[in-house]
Image (cartoon, rainbow, N blue to C red; front, side, top):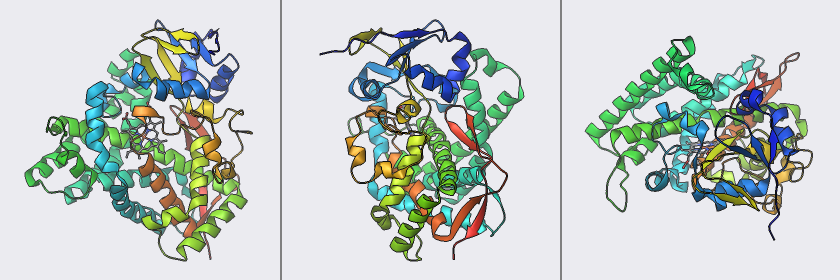
Length: 440
Ligand code: HEM
């Protein structure tokens, strides 16, 4: 039997920005208004879905009734028609062509670059010399995606440029996407920085593609997979522009997300000595002093629990969709054209599914407890046809970074400092000032 759900209405005009910029108190308050809350974001009817069951319905069961929403469209000027924004049969075709870059075997190869990058980072740490951990984790995430994308010599130049420019593109791009459209055209510093950084990245990525085409060899990197891919139905490959859009999409989708998770991970470890102790015990037992390798991962079960808990507590704030046909959510019919917002943050902090949700507790994921959660209650990587293509990549990267750090160092918060969360499309960790202390 269907349960009728009356959409509540909130006078939100003044709150649009807080909603889109992820204010915890504001989004949490929506839950009290029901499972579907109509929010006032302008002329288009917009509904915020607050429950796990409807989150699952929007993302998975009825996923085909939606396109990507308003927020994503604002990123189109620089993400082009890459995987995150393409739709319908073109999206399916691109996804098929890119999937081979994310198979277990490929990720096992990328794992070597991940271990190298994490080892190089911790090699630069000195006992007692404080680190700004969010910066270290951003640098690590850039190196990991950069090295897996581009393994050639010219690729190294591209990685250097990406290191220099990608955060200007990401940060200023997010500000532009969340501002009224005319703001993007104003000659203000945020736009100048964005345009210059985006142009520098564009030039070097196109240069790498051109040099690859001249040579035509498979280097075993992600770029080679994109350039060698052929659609099994039409036999067609990707144009240079499409490869470029996919590369920029992977850089955008794959760097900051992982960096945020890594930053909070080390923050939480420092706050929870018992969790840290168990991480050390598992790493010592499994690795016995060796560097971590892909083959070790199945035996690092507690580390995966810790990573799951970080992804639960600090996920992406909101995902948006636009209904292309009417959608029936247990009796409440959302009209075609409606914008629908689902919030991984909100369902991950729903006490009905995650008791005492602010508590960091990796034991939530012990044994098969995850399997008992209702669908839609844990969606760090979204779900359905648009689920994150990099989910295994990201988990592998984070577990490898954790194992590499934990084998040699503890990170201790600098006394008198306090980590903060800065909210945009996720809660970004800031002021993670921590001192590396060698483990004996
Ligand atoms: C902890 C790290 C990560 C998190 C939390 C994350 C989260 C997500 C989420 C929630 C989506 C779905 C968006 C939607 O439904 O609208 C997504 C899509 C995507 N992610 Fe990730 N992601 C992470 C890492 C990565 C990495 C490392 C890569 C690539 C190397 C990547 C590439 C992508 C791409 C290309 C899409 C679009 C997929 C499609 O629409 O077919 N992500 N990610």
